[in-house]
Length: 299
Ligand code: NCD
Image (cartoon, rainbow, N blue to C red):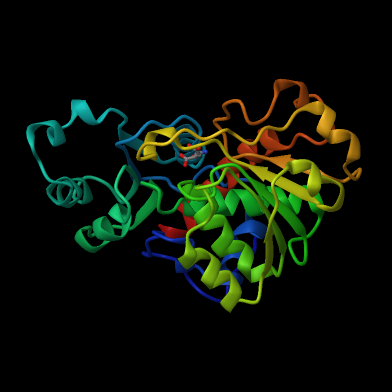
């Protein structure tokens, strides 16, 4: 069965998860369950401009393009581009718009994707802009949450780690607000979500609380979304990471799952990997279909 949407995403950019309605998000998640159409992107060229390190996001976008019959032109190393000769992002985007049908952009500056979308003649997908947002990660996070819990509405979700600089957290919190979760935050002091983020949750009537230790909340939550400390974005300061190991899993419910956008550092001990609670590798795997569906809907 091929799903048909009562709206079109064609020609649109995805800079923030707020660019999609709840209905559009659910449609993308539903259609990501369907087999890929190997000719959906036939004749299309997708430019992948990754001006910051990436493994999963870049490779899953590339695989998603190739598996649907599209072609890829890419930059994975900013020093190899004319940005190193002083070319502006806007000149680069204008030029690449004339070579490709869509641009997937990862950039170190907050807001770069929106700015690029204003310059570009083709859709832009934000693959992470500074500490700001990572909307396609939020889509695949929701996909993994629904896959692991069977639903999105009304879950009890703990979020651990760097809740201030993690762009996946920013997009995920915005997306989750559609589904009335109960949120539990466990983070080093100084890495709390911004006051703007907390205010927004309050406005949406999402209940949240802060807790010093993972063990305070693990027995009662459906899932834990862990993140690494974003060392490259910290302006000074040393933070003791929040860490999960196998011994902490003794108290969790059977259906409890651990998610993480990856890459992980020390925040999830490898001894958690072969427990029935680890879901982070399945989470990353689902990214291919979610991104594939998004590409074929925007083009
Ligand atoms: C994340 C990112 O780049 O923001 N990685 C990813 O895309 N899966 C998370 C991170 O780097 O910590």
